[in-house]
Length: 409
Picture: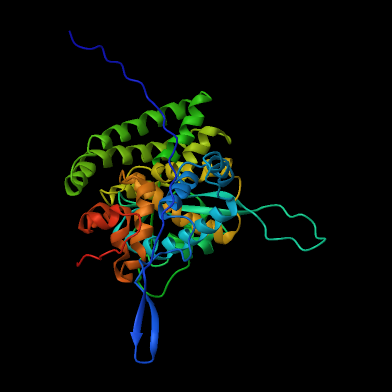
């Protein structure tokens, strides 16, 4: 008669295993007497490691991808009869993060600065102070800052800095001459409105964010200012028009934007100039109109390149990972730890962008990296990892420890 089938999800506890690396030793007879030689052993990123790269990738993804603090992972591993203290986890995170940041992530930054339109934003993070002197007073955590830079649909990058000022921004974006989409923070003015230069070297072109502009009109609208409602309706028409061109190739999108989107933006800015003089006092309505007026040139620049989106909400979404961590593990142990965390945040966020299993990616890249040529680190970036992995010998990656054959270009 057949069967009646029902399905239910069953959970199996995570399995832990110990990988044993046995290196053969040989007695070699020589004219001067017997010698002991060892067989070559696979290269490992962590010398004398007690954690396999799969365990390192698991711990790093749980913390920097899911926001699980190390002390909770320590409790979980103890429950699984595989105790690893959080100090060991911190050492592995610092070494892995700094190594990946100086190699793979650095190559990603280089490519982003040469061929991409960038969106950026920043948020704060607490940094634990150093050890206090004997008898000294307790010190509170200092405030550091994480910048995120989203490069087209290629990379999501993070950078840690102690200060959030114009000097930091100038150093971070040194050498970049393309379009940079950001909010209206004055720290970015040094890139586009800095002191005059003797040469004709092009500057960074700041692009405005229509989401920030819309936010001010929304605040005015919920307080029942007619200007807020009218501004929201005009911005809504701009978004709906641009959404219709989203799937077209760049050149076609440029033509459609100039034909249909440009008139709407020009009409909106002309309305802003007229409405500014009809709104008295200092209200939410005048604040919204003032923002649109001050950012008029930057808001128009979304038409200069078809790759530029209307807003930089993608960079704000990328910062959610930092905010979740700020609530869960509260602070970073030092500036060095925060710098290594920025590299790990970059790789995990880029894996999500390209729909790659970040935990498996970290495991395999940490095994491949000791063999990889320094001038080809970009091939290990999440954007290119699937193509690179297809060129590797499958049997070598399937084994927990093995030699890695670097494919030819």
